Length: 459
Image 1 (tube, one colour):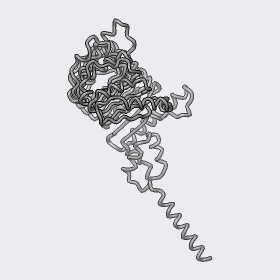
Image 2: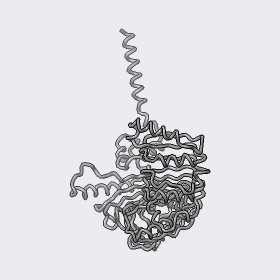
Image 3: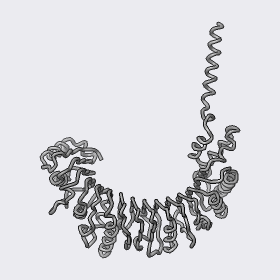
Image 4: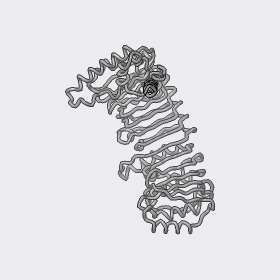
């Protein structure tokens, strides 16, 4: 009996020790806790102050503040918003006042028309004074919010993300962001071409510039001059203005370009000698016949300045727009550095000829991926040099069996082809009879390369 009690006592002691060892969070250093808490919304971080004496002031030393997801899900009526907003603004005031660190690394805020603009400006001024490095602002219908002047001359900011929900960005005449490296702009209306140009040209170390759903109102020119720029993204599918503007870009160190936009009125682009990859998706709104020639002209003006690119992705719609040009693509500079080309959506049979023309000016192409709705248009009077000498890999997407003549053309002419991958539609994978017939024909096709491996896969 005594022995049994001793075992029970020892077991309870072990369980007690195990229980004590479970609180591993308390054993973590302050710096590690700061890092973990930096991933949480500030409202959650501050609430940890009730956990224990050690946690009471821990949040005051965290340099990352996130005030984006603050509105309570229990507030259902519009009349409750002002009171909740008032409480939240008081909370932000308190957090900024009680912070014990001199500098703020990152600050994120979502505010709307219920906010007091003067208090928001006071927060931004405090951030500038505390040398904020990263600033993320989403401004939702805030009644033409005006930034304080010190915002536009911030010396410490390295990353700025600004979403204005379709409002105008009012720019001053004095702008300087000497440390800004990343600038991401979403749903902003630009209305002054001179101040807009001043904005971008006064970011001397800017490396990434992104426009999403931005619009250019009554602007003859959209000028981007950024000598250090490496990545440029223009993704503006529905915003107006670019089609009536002339786009000027000076970015001699550009490495990556994404252009998902309508064709501009004209382009003045300096060469991009270091360009590695580009993604071009011209958005076509069905221009009347008398405007197609102008659209085709503009589309080639942009493309000809990308001749140094190594990896290029273009949509089927882009080739459609390029087909409207009076001057054929074979008159453009050769894309001698291009080794990979991806056609990201289906080609119409009327635009296949445009793709073939582009292959003729891509003499060193090694890899090609494309969609095609059929074999119409795939005829070669002269085999592109890349097919004869350099093409090693080709992919066909959405294959349904109607493209066999296209497959035959590549197998017959690609002298160094190593791999052909055919991504078929799901219906073909379940049709074993048709699969067998396709495989039989493939085995009979002549091949310029005896090392080529043909494989099937689902799309």
